[in-house]
Length: 355
Image (cartoon, rainbow, N blue to C red; front, side, top):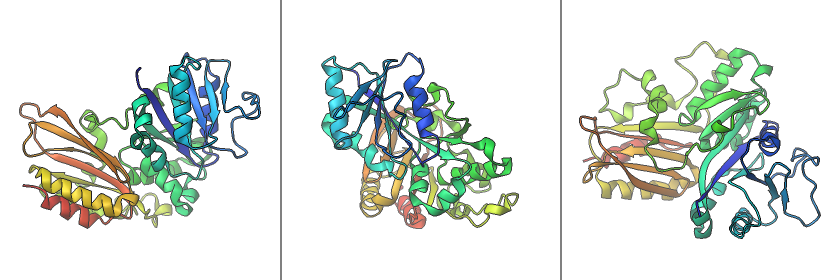
């Protein structure tokens, strides 16, 4: 049976997750979607759609979608859904998991890799984070969970932009880019967003996404294009403080220096595979809890193919990608997104893994 794609939807209360979910659950979009609700606040999906029998965990909706609430843990809920699908008792094509507003999506993502039964049934597609433009500044300042959710995202949707001034939205976008340069972000209105932008984003595929997406590191490049590529650890040195030295226009968030930051390592010389494995193993062991997402395309000694690697917290995987093209410059690019990671240790350590 084909793997069932899964999407994790995260974001603070009021950011529009429920609005987005309602649309997914009620619109006649021709896709059969199972939604796993992990949120029982005032905001959970209205009872008009959910006529839930006591003791009933899974509810079939009239447009063919399925909604279910987590009774035990996510693993058992996913296993139950997959089993019902195999037996033909339920018909759905994909799963959306809504996390509680305060959740760290990391462990939810890890469920898909840690458990063999789940890994054989599901393919984790992406983590979507909704950010509420009106309250984002306060939430990001006060709540580390909100900053984590931004760091984890494969795609960021900014809601309620019509309620705040344009320069505030610009400032927010700027801040989000510093925290997570990997994730494209776009403004959405009241959860109105094309399903093609929600599903099949392939954020977790070990594919050469970095090559396909030339903008992946554009932010980093244009700020520091005066550096020579060989000086990998000067790259982004000024990015330590996203207090926007090169963006004085937005004085009102000049003080912001978030603990969730990203930095990039680039190198032209190839990596020594054994050294790199030892070094990454060591940093993941020490800092894994604070490493939210990390990803790269690597030029490794001993192979004519690109090596693609990525990780979430302590879980790291790598894979051989396509061959380096004729005349293509062979270099490595890695991005790390985490909470107060010691950038110098990472950059110097990686530098020492090069041949």
